[in-house]
Length: 260
Image (cartoon, rainbow, N blue to C red; front, side, top):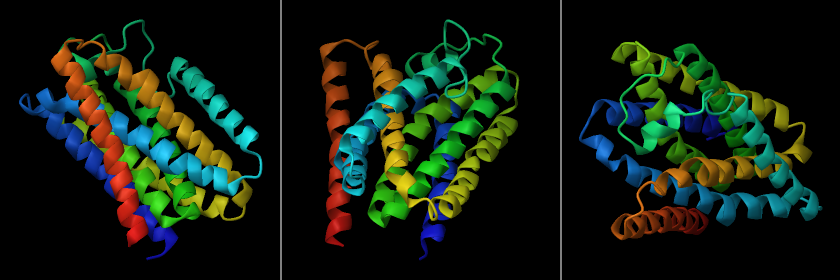
């Protein structure tokens, strides 16, 4: 299978899978009890992909590790600014409903604009597509691991988006359709990244560094704080175990891919 076919397949499968799973969680009260576990697992998958695969590959491809580290640092700051500007996480009030829905059972609507949510999510998915393209252009193994890590963190985010759309007055079918259409922006990002980055190979290490920064930021600034709302010892042990499981999954997948 060609690199472009891998990129398109990963984008389509990732987008459809994350939206379908998110819809199942958002519409099923029984499934929502497992959302906290999914967030913990996603944190492990994200950090595992960054430190076991993405950063090591980026370091191999660059002659200036210090500059690469600076790019990661810049990326973390960039995503903080983008989040503040409503482009990365849709939140534009003191209390962010998208984040609250991941860790609480609030069911009130603060008047979020469904269109604003879709604009932010579409931009996010487009960038994910570019990141997937950069990873696959490096090698197939890295592309697969990166795509799986992106899917892992997309599902809890999409649950929040889906619930906000419902609270904003959209029907279940309309909310599902909007999330699905938005998710396919990753295909456009992936295809554009494929054709652009083939002639700009020197950009790939920097894009991988930005991908690492985005995953670190999402895990540390976005997902981990929510886990602290459950501070009991039993919950903490479960969270740590699931984070370790997420990291181990990435490590095991890498072993399988290299062995194959």
